Length: 397
Length: 50
Image (tube, rainbow over all chains, first blue to last red; front, side):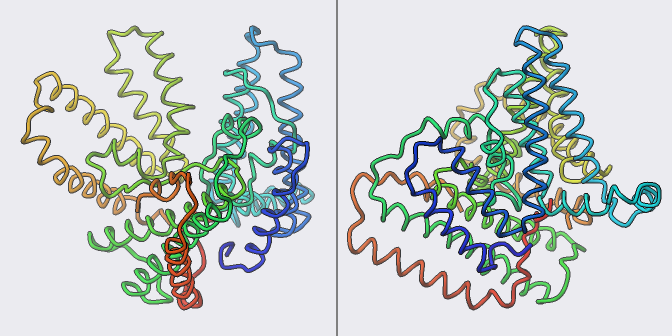
């Protein structure tokens, strides 16, 4: 899916901007949902756009029907929320298990050819379902457990499948998308704002098509695969992934700012991080925020309530391992990625204990620590990054 | 590499003619470099279809 070098994408992007600029009495999220449907129709074809709309309508109808019969005090409400989440999770697992062409799919096709399981997998991959899955989870958490209102189907379509974030995120928050109906446009000079956003979008394209691609062509040749066989390859791949993913994210965020559709930031100078914990607040930030909102905080609160504050240390370790175990599995359903997630969780728990210990002893105020941390920290964090890229390298592509 | 400095610019006053010219020139330079590289690029993003 060569979205950003396809002229049709940029024509659609401009048309969407013009259409969104037309003032109407309708809510901003509804207008974006409707125009987004047009954009997906042009970019992916009417069959895929219609199928995606019907899937979102089914998701919306299921939630709406459930909410109608479960008031906020009803204990069945949580059960209903978990049931819908389980169905979405099964679809996610179906998508992530690389079943295309497998014996399992061939068996399903032989038993029930009308199901077109092969087409369904292509459909999920074409929509980058991993991102839709986390958006669905965020929406369910907000509606069932935080009592947020349910958006109308078209607004929900705009939230779950925004055309400018379709390829690979970022992971936008349900509550932020809801809030776009309340925000009013600031009195900024419009042409200057557009110019600065265009500057950001072209910087994103520059990251990907000039920096990342030059790096790839210089080290691996224009038609070769990026194979990791040593530590230097891991370092090159880490830098390549940054310029590829940060470039994409900046283009998506620039378009989001242009349309005034909440599109979170994804990177903030990750190579300057002073620890692994700090690194994960700077790399794929929207995913980190999703994990904090929907896994880390709720699990930690419930576990502390269940086992007591005296066991907070063990709770913190378990929560961190579960949260990053999920991040690992989200990348790929494999033992390598689970181990990667568990190792990250353990490392961050160790860092937390070291930080607490240093604060108790007063070492964190020492001038020696304050002077050396800004350069020792990034060396340590980048060494961990390179080691982790080498560990999962064979399963990145 | 830090996105924040690009997006948290609050435009209280309009850009001067020099600032506008500078940004426009920088955009054009980037677009020229992108155009020269685009035919050599695979075009795919690493997380596409994720």
